[in-house]
Length: 533
Image 1 (cartoon, rainbow, N blue to C red):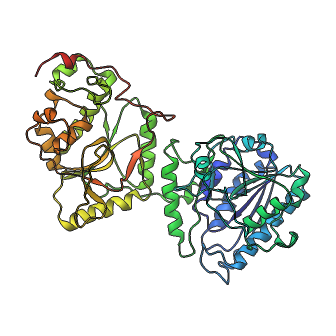
Image 2: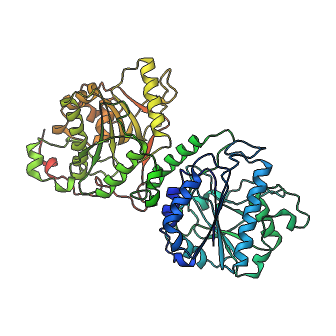
Image 3: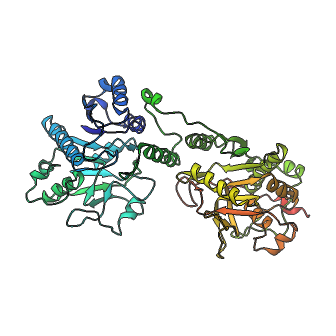
């Protein structure tokens, strides 16, 4: 049996049910126990719509709701946990537990409806661990998760050193912890589960907080039942709880940012089909820039799909620029373009000449700059297809641009994502708290560029003296350590800056699972080495 308490979650339910439907577990062996009350949104309508379609596919459905009142009398805030709110939740969870026992259910899962179980095998994987009480490790936008590794005698959270290694999967396995919540599977076949409760009155001499998850954890400890958390596989994501001052709009924004993070490792965020009309369409624009470019290799359609879905979530309309594929580059094309490697160039780490992938990457950005000049775009945002956006990217970039305009800063290029290589300090720009004077950096994941900046880069005539694009840019803003390389570019007047903190990062780093490089993992372009300038 799955117990679901839905309150003011109309915005999460289309995704919650989208992943629930995809679980690899027979629906006719799952009973649903759903309660909803104290809503100020249309949560009940969403539940009714979904049940109209899916009710008959489950073993049984026990659905009850109350349309009034909309809030608790002693805590009107949507995210306020007043005493009556806690008592109400405790009553409902205890009723669900009692119902599951009465129906001789083998398991009960208490599942918050802002949990998204992306791993289709979640139920089977948890059951195979053969624990009385277990939860999957869930990710959020930060370090918050659905378990504690430490608890005080009074029942409150205690910071420990082993929390992050479990969350970040530096240690993988099943771990004994004092607290789990939000997605808890209880094996009711074990006799020791009979003493588990959410009702503090059933626990002798209980003096802790009136809090459902703390009472449940205390009852487990009192009964000698260990709580476990598993990270044997990535299981999914969850929303972090908000403060009582927060609004539903704050939660909707958190959901949007969480969906963007979920899209790092999946092509789309799944919506239950009958609930798609409850999901508002995000209006798309160019963030005030004349153009937004997305550079994508034609043979990487999965990256294109992921990025377009991500940009759609953020509300950004992008022009796809077909990247130059280094693997398809031949000597004839290289010769026609007048491409020759800068004679003294050697990769700083591998001491090798240019690869065809690096030439393709440079040309992709070069053609963006040419397009900016051709269409006289005053400003543009350039994106590669292997990046992840920081939460609230849209708000942050708009605030950055506003601050830059406010002080009248003259700029040609602003990195939004990069790999900083210089150890020297990068002073902040006076009057802007999120912008620094940039030093030697790698990567061209994402940057802002002006028409004047594009002209400077193209006018430098880089093709007959080529270096990788992330070496070329530091040369052009005169922060490259290689004096000989800089000598080939006498006019180094690109006005470059960087967002600080950065607004984008790579989806994956070297050595990680799913890491792919289209520049490093390609043939050496030996034809450009033989020719002299």
